[in-house]
Length: 209
Image: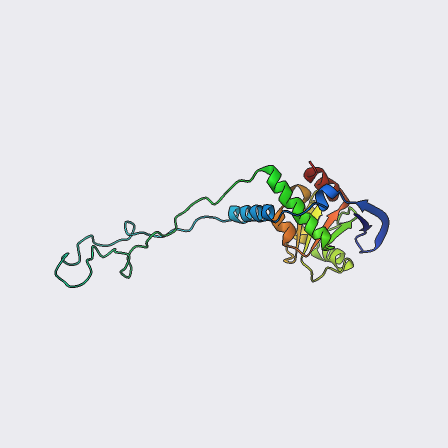
């Protein structure tokens, strides 16, 4: 499929790019997408949650009452989980949620996500550019030219220079990422994905292997 390259003002240029069908035109694999997104979200978890079980709670270990003859249930010490202030039963403890997927499956998931985006006409190709300053206003002018002011966007570039980083990092509705860091979650978690010409070539080189 061919797409027309636009400039930073949102105007069509004379250039067209032909997207690699092995990256943007495959039959999407939903299960691969699910596994990759699940891994990305799990790896973001800190795993620092903790709780105190009965051995961690401060309190006397004296038996509260005799074992038999009271007509009620038997009780041990005051740290019993059924009492207020007692320990928690099977509570969470610090753990590592990181998991691993093989490279082929992750590549398939990302190609599937890109294929969905192209199918929904949510891919834009823009000329390579450099910002003259680090002002957010300058970056927002590019989004305005593309009619993406109120649209969640992902800009994929070959490399992020200092000006682009500072101009874009405080916008909640827009994210800039290197082509080498492109992942399934970021692709799906946006309404428009914008590739610079250099980033598009880098992405196709990475994912067409």
